[in-house]
Image (cartoon, rainbow, N blue to C red):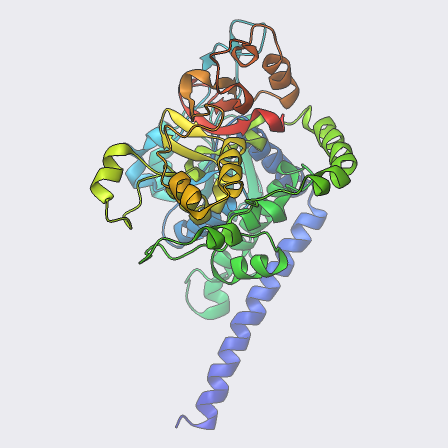
Length: 462
């Protein structure tokens, strides 16, 4: 057993570290409460990130060593609250990964009357370095386009003293100071990153949540709802499931038998049978809510409203049937669609059959209604085993890419609505052969690369 003296020494050291890091956070808080430059720059950083995400861009986080580990944690936090982020190692950047960063370019806009518009940057770079002069970052920065905004979390109090910010003009750089009240070697006897990583982590979290609060402003789609939608697993997901009766419970990825239709009904976020009376009772309330929401949507960008394409799974034939080889040849079955939606709640009921064929939520609900209205188990069994490409419910199929209405990520919902109901819009085609008209799909594309689809919006939601 350790002696009492040794235990007291260990406890005193631990308390000293905790107290010092607490004081470091208090010092950081005081700085952002009283320093005009710090306050101005945190506002600038939040506004920059909101603009970046709304235009279909992303945050690129970069750091080395302990700062790199803080950067990876911040990347994860940003993504969990709906702020698209990636981590870039500066050494790997010099060996091809610079392609992650997309700078400003001249492009032809889809909705603007101008034929050539200098669209603001797509991506923003966030550097984390306590010293502000990390060699790996200094070697990378000369290769970063001048049009990419740079945010830096460092110990420097003014951008003029920070080497990392010397490569860009002041209007393209933002310093987020994270100094210490006492250096680590003086406090702990060694210069191990401790208090410095604590304040960097806290400031990064503050930036993430402040940005999420400014970015996600739609009713029912605030930061809390976004976070819950991206976190169906673990204790957090279990807590959400308990609080929300309609939450999806993710099944095991390996199943020995196919689930029954009744078990699917319990798991799906939509019912297999519908009560028209309930719809009538809630019609007025739904109409009022819809009117209020659409008013707020007018100035919201498509990039804030779409379901990201990376969240939409591609359905594959189930491996549980004895006729696996034959099913793969024929394509996925309706049962496969339902299992895919259960296992991927973040898709919001969107499912891809391939890169060029997608099933929007209303179409999936229509398939589900067909199953729910089947009067016999044999009929239901036939439907759930039906090929997804050829399901016929009033001759409905998946929506192919040539039927998608393409809009830029920076388009507002009001602009999309104008195009959607324009006489020249493909979605207003009244041809009897247009079987997908009730299930119109809006694909949101990159502002620079119009061939790159970022996500999807159902026309009914516009």
